[in-house]
Structure formats: structure tokens, C-alpha cells
Amino acid sequence: MFAKVLTKAGQRSSTEEQLLCKHQVVGANPTAGSMVLIYITCRDKKEARKIASYLIKRRLTACCDIFPIDSIYWWNNKIVKDKEMVLILKTLKKNFTIIEREVKKLHSYNTPCILEISVSKVSSKYLRWLNKEL
Image 1 (cartoon, rainbow, N blue to C red):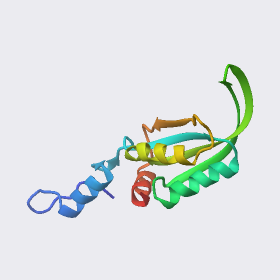
Image 2: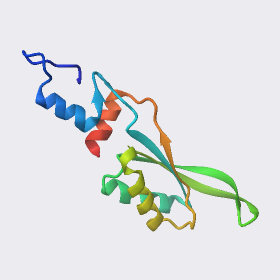
Image 3: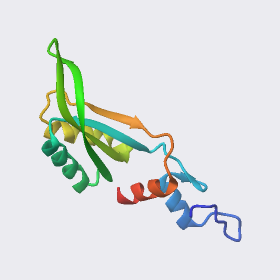
């Protein structure tokens, strides 16, 4: 879809240039460098859904996955074993700072786990969809 299209003068069309800039796409292969996953642990499903809905409605993330985990961690000099929920956001790198700020406002933990995970490869069709939604 984003293959190089040349005008008669050998230049890219302005429409293609705009698409390439908007989606940070080069040639026929969109790069994954702009996409990240954000991993957030939550107290329970209700909190995870609240955060996910808030971020989705504001188009800060295109998709959220929520699933249960068993966690073991240090807290206040004690080992804690707990059931939590993980929220994984699919978004763009440029959104991390605002997502982190908004999650801290909504989250029940004093020190929530909010991690940015780089994506080195992603299907071009999925990346186009992600960019379109955000």
C-alpha cells in the first residue's frame, strides 16, 4: 500500500509524502520503532478496566489487554504474594509520558508499575491500524 509511487517527474506524490510522514513509514515496510507496549499492574479487574476505558476514550491507546497474574514482590521489607491484573496497552512511543501521568492519577497503588516495552517488529497492517486509531 505504501510502495514508492513516482509522478512523471520522478517525485513522490504529495499525498504519499503526507501518509509517510503521518505514519512514520518508509517505503513498503512500516517501522515498528514508533509502537510500544505499556505494561501496568493493577489491584483488580475493576481498576484495570477503569484505567483502560479512560485511556481508550482519550485515544491514548488503540487497544488494551487485561489478564490475571500471580505476583511475588518485595514491599515494605516483606515478601508479598498477591493476585493482580496486568493491563497491556498498544500505543505509540510519544504517548508514554501522558499515559504515565494519567495512570498515576487513577491508580490505587502508591508506586504503580508502568513499563514501556519497545516493539522491534510488527505487521505493517497492524501498525497502520494503530496509527489510524491514534
